[in-house]
Amino acid sequence: MDWISFYDFKHSVIYVNERHRDVHYKTIAQDIRALVPSPDAIVMDYGCGEATSAALVAEACGHLTLVEAAPNVRAALKERYGANPKMTVMNPDEAAATPAGTVDMIVLHSVAQYLTADELAAMMKTFHRLLKPTGIFVLGDIVPPSLASVWAALSLLRFGAANGFFWAAVGGLIRILVSDYFTLKKTHGLSHYTESEALAKLKAGGFKPTRAAHNIGHNQQRMTFISTPV
Image 1 (spheres, rainbow, N blue to C red):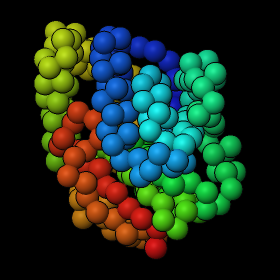
Image 2 (tube, rainbow, N blue to C red; image 1 turned 30 degrees about the vertical axis):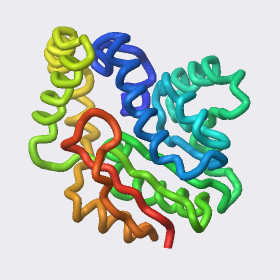
Image 3 (cartoon, one colour; image 1 turned 135 degrees about the horizontal axis):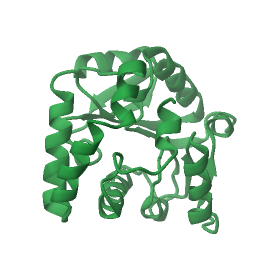
C-alpha cells in the first residue's frame, strides 16, 4: 500500500463521519474560493481528494479542473461533477498535458507532506510550466516538523467541537492509532518543512513566495504559501 491507495478507499481514519468530511471540504473550498484571482480565472486543484464542495470554487472562476491520482476517488468526482460545464476531472498525466501558460491558479493543498522533496520539486516544475506569467501557485497545509501530530489531533478536536462531531473525532483519533496510517507513516514517511525551508523550496522551483496569513482549512498550525512564477 502507498498513500494514493490508502486514500482511494473510504475508512473512518480519514474522516470520522460524513459530517466531518463535508465540513472539512466546505472549509477548504471556501478558503480556495477566496483566493481565486478573477471571475474568469482558469483554476486547477491538484490532489483535490473527494472535494465535496468544489462547486463553490467553480462558481467563483471561469473553469475548475480537479486533479486526482486515486482512481476510485476520481471516478466519484466524475460522477458528482460530470454534468457541470465549468468543471473537469483529470488524472495527473492528463493535467500535465494541459497547454503551457494557460492556468491562472494552481492549488496543491495537503499533498506536499505525502511527497518526497524530489517529487515536490518535479511537480512544481510542471506547475511553473502550466501557469500564466501572471499566475498564482498556492501551496497549502505545509506541515512544520515540531509537534505535528499533537497539533493535528488538537485541531481535529477543536474542529469537531465547533461543528458537532467532537466525540466522533475522539473515536477517530483512537482508531488511527491502530490503522494502516501509522504503518504507512513508518514505511513511506511524511515530509515536513519549516517556514524558511518551504520558502527556499519555492524559490528554487522558480517562484516568488510569501506565507499567507491564514492556512487553507482548519489547522492553523500548518502553513499556506502564495507564489508567482519568476
